[in-house]
Length: 153
Image 1 (cartoon, rainbow, N blue to C red):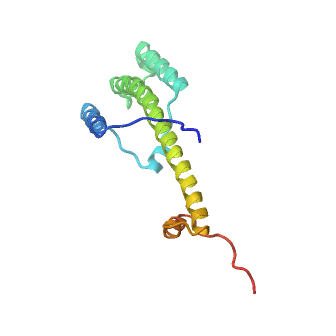
Image 2 (tube, rainbow, N blue to C red):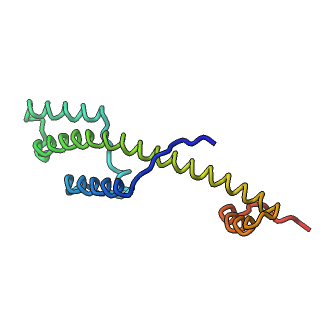
Image 3 (cartoon, helix red, strand yellow):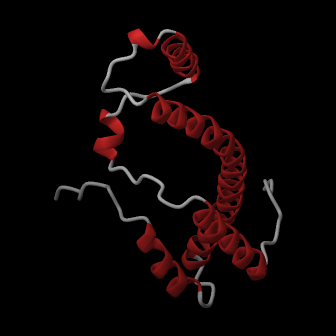
């Protein structure tokens, strides 16, 4: 069976990673926390929207008469600056997150596939009355409840 990944993550590494995440939380205080519904309702800003916002800021800065009185241009500029800076950090974190996620998926796949092979061996051993196999099989088979319909008499 192909082993997709073979790495060891030491407890000290996990502790350091969690400390680094805590430091990130400290570096970025007052971040927004949105519910799924709030996230769904908010307009999203992609690359094209960033360019659009930049142009509106330029036009409003050059032509103050088109700036609505209820818009705080300095706050708008601050929001755009925040988006750009956070997107830079998000891109780096996403790359790292994807690598962590892929590694956890690969290691989990390795562990699960090998465990399924042990389960099948235990199942076969139980049929052959191999000592210890029946008890192990009875315990392990709880993971796979039968979905077969009862046979009619």
